[in-house]
Image (cartoon, rainbow, N blue to C red; front, side, top):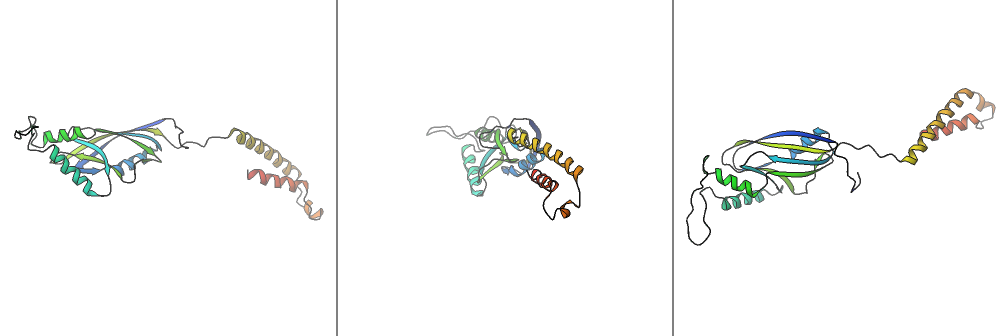
Length: 219
């Protein structure tokens, strides 16, 4: 497909991906996503991801240096600590979150989710996510304990596109094939295996027709 040419969105696929986590941290997803995309047969399109939780989220980030994700965790712990809220201003002490039904890590997880993304829409090209060299897709687990997380995957796109026919070449090819069929009938009707010998090695009209058949078959 040439740049700027839009393929019709003729196919879609749906899947729910389950990811087990072992506590706060980041689970890289792009390998699993690419495997599923390849299995759908869709070559070009858009993958829409939705994290079906309020205490986990999605992000695109560094795929090479693990210190990037460690620093991100440290920043999140500073912004939304488990111990509670620190009022703005010079005075005031931390106070516990009001929403702590599931423990001290409950409300901080909701805050960190609000600061990141619940959904991502990613381009698909050649049956793979179109990511930058240093980019990866991560599931962010914000709870201290492990859990089973669900992601909704919705892929829209097109499969392999047939080569566009050139009308001029297509018509010329049809005419050549018709001429070839006619020549082939004439060769069969006029074939004389001893003619070339009797003519002293000079090409006969049948030989010339056979040469033309070879030309047509190579078109």
